[in-house]
Length: 334
Image (cartoon, rainbow, N blue to C red; front, side):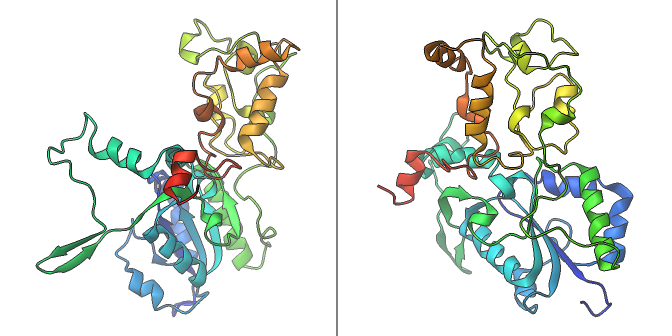
């Protein structure tokens, strides 16, 4: 507890885009409930806060920390370990912390290829072909920047996590519901779910929330959505040959994308019980193809132009694959 009697709250932004921070602010007046019931002690994007201030706090003095973003460099890892020590409840908040998300797709490439794309591509003004230096001597002293890791890791690959809250970003109404739950727990009116549970989302699939009509799925080919002349507003997108990830994706978003005639891309991560998201999705797609011939099935699946982007767009870093060989070699693997 703080000196004012309120439990302490923290939020941190690691390797991610910042959308999770915005989604918290998008709970509108519900943010006042956070202020009324918590002392916000560490939230770098919203307040002036220093790492040394957190280091000075007693261990487990922060009741709740929402940690968004994956672990891409040694600073991310250092703060993840710091927040784990200082927090009673550490939540992997958003797809990047839970699964790696879009930044995790860089696990297909070596650090050298990543830096070349960032600093020496046609869109970059860098005539001296400069690269980041982890240490640099200045007149004022040596400055340091975080060391880039060859492989992006999910939060639970670095520290134990109490709860997972998926989404890219989590839907604001789900965040508000979790805020209400935590406040009720503080008031003795509710109990927290068991450790390791996924909060702010469902336990089934997006298909179960989708109002589109599903018949017997008989797919003869997969097509890009922009190549479909007219999308049937009532029929399951997958049955129209549009590769929709709903069959393997956890529900809780309200099936917003399929309702807008856009295929689910999987931002809420694997549904309950799914060990590997991509493997489950490949099996789901193969099972609805109108053929029993393995070669025909393979040919139809080959019609998906970007298999990794389709099956592991949000989940590569958290999957059984984790990374491609170039990244593993960069990590010292043979």
